[in-house]
Image (tube, rainbow, N blue to C red; front, side):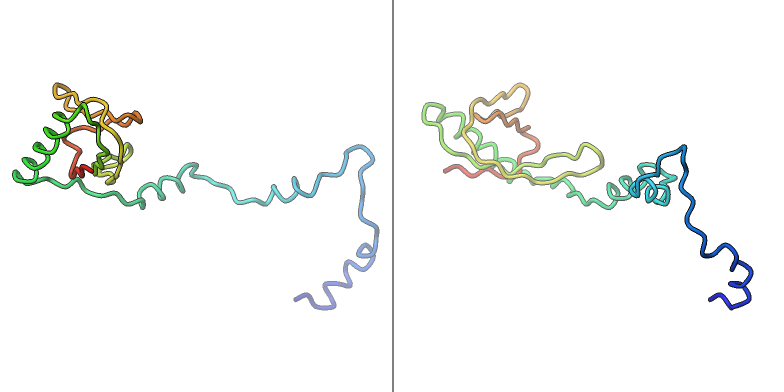
Length: 139
C-alpha cells in the first residue's frame, strides 16, 4: 500500500486527463489484453505431456486353445458364405503414436476372407488382421 508521501510527489499530474494520440488509432481492448497472454516457450510441450499421459492397452497373447477356437469360428464363417450372418469381432487396434493400443468391437457382415494376407474384410469397409482378433461371436 502506498503512503501519503508517495502520492504527494505525483499530485501535480495525477488528475490530468489521459493522453489520446491524434496520429494513431486506439488499440482495441482485445489486442491490448493479448499483450499480457502467457508465452508458450515450449511449443507443443502441453500436447506431448497429454500424449504421454494417454493410456493404452497391452496386446493380449492368446493361448493355443484360444487360437484354435478362433480358427474354427473363421472356418465356419468361410463355409457359410451363401448365408451371411452378423458377426461380432473383438480385435486389437494398435496405436499409431505409442506402444500398445485399444480393443475394439465391431459387428458386421463378412464380405471377404483373405487367408493369404490374413485379413478379413467386412461389408462396411472395416479391415481386420487375423493376428489382431481375440474373440468372434457368430449370430
